[in-house]
Amino acid sequence: MKIQKTCLSLLAIGCAIASSSAFAATCNGTQGSIAAPPATPAAVSGNSCNNNPNYNGSTFCGGVSFSNTGTDVYQIQMGNAQGLSFTVTSAAFTPDIALLATSCADNSTCTVESSNGTGNVTANVPNGSAGTFFIIITDSTGAGAQCGAYNMSFAGTLPVKLQDFSVQ
Amino acid sequence: MNSFTMKALAVAVLGLAGTSMAMAACPTAVTTSGSTTPGGGGAWSTQFIATDATFNIVSPGLGGTGCTAAFSIGALSNSRVFVQDNSPAAPGEPRYRARFLVKLSNLTSFSVSNQTAIIMRENDTTSPAQFSSDQLVVRIAGGATPSIRFFVADGNAASGLVSIAVPLPSSASGEYRVETDLQIGAAATSQANGCTTTPASGGCFRYWVTDAAAASADATPTGSYVINNSGWSGAKTLFLGLTTGTAAFRTAHAGQTVLLDELDTRRQTFIGQ
Image (tube, rainbow over all chains, first blue to last red; front, side, top):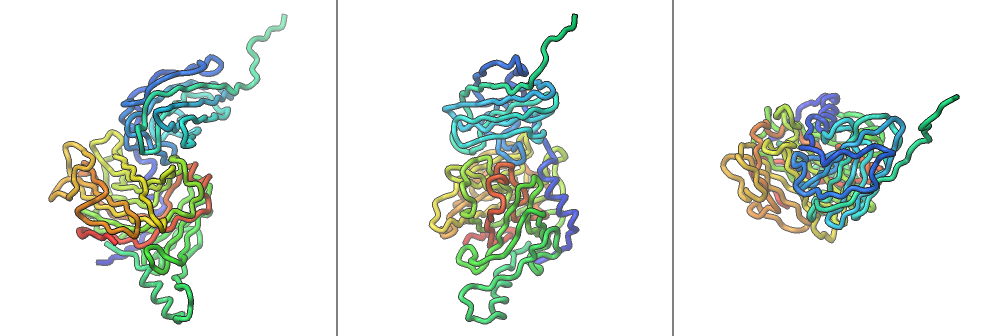
């Protein structure tokens, strides 16, 4: 059987675009909040196994796979024109890290996403507008443990900011 | 259902051109940006090429054939290029098999797992409101060993999807055959490798990922998954090409072609080589 039907170009384009944004999986819960710069801690340790199973099977940042065995999420409140970089190191899995804006839904705006195929990866978050963001720690390889213990460290990229000023 | 008729067209063009040519003469692709209907002289329903993407038909083809389709996307976030088949029956096929060949050797340093792009999608007319209407998405993903990723609609999963990663096997030619068999139906519990044989009813996804030169058999899929996709209406539209790529893919592989060939779709019978 061979049937050819005419498809309007707009329909075709719409189909292609709609597929990536029609639904959202949100995190089951965060692993905590990270203080914004300059109070950001030097490092945080965790273990991603079995966390946020809502993400299993889904993707983030335009198609990057979540781990099927566990993903960690941290909330961070960023100020206006504040940026930072964060580094995740793990011997148990290959970290793929990201910063999502506004909510922890898998289709939230992807501020930054990074992986390099090793156990040590850094994401640099440029200075931006104030708001709530979510740090994602997962493994997109689809192979191996895809979760485990890790350490996350931070480095601020703070703008010059007047902390105290008075005129007597 | 439909099979792309690129090979038949290639033979016809070769015949017109004579037999003295050393290389097969391939059909001339419409390479202009935007949507073209029908596509490939009627071989597919329509095609779309974004302004920074490319589509062409080049020689040699995959699987020992004369010609293949070549797709590349650019750096723009909405870059995409695909051919589209609308021939599945409305409202959708309750069981849908698809097979194609793919070659990734033009992707230099395809080495990190966040470099991923969709090469095939099966889209349904209706689905649960909270989930995508794609019953199946097939991605390529980079890595030390690149992989094929299947994202299969599953109402039992919170995300509406199960994902399956299959590392590409060794291949002397760098050509791989991907075949899928997806049946719409209910399942109380989803289970990996739970339906090596497709049951008379119930949601089941079976898949084969092999070297293009290797034989495959209906009874021995690479893997399977019992799924609950009763909320989806069945495949109505198929997209083949590069329908989207992640930022990492677009950055690393802008302008590099993925070769896709020998697409065949059926309702019941195994396709194989």
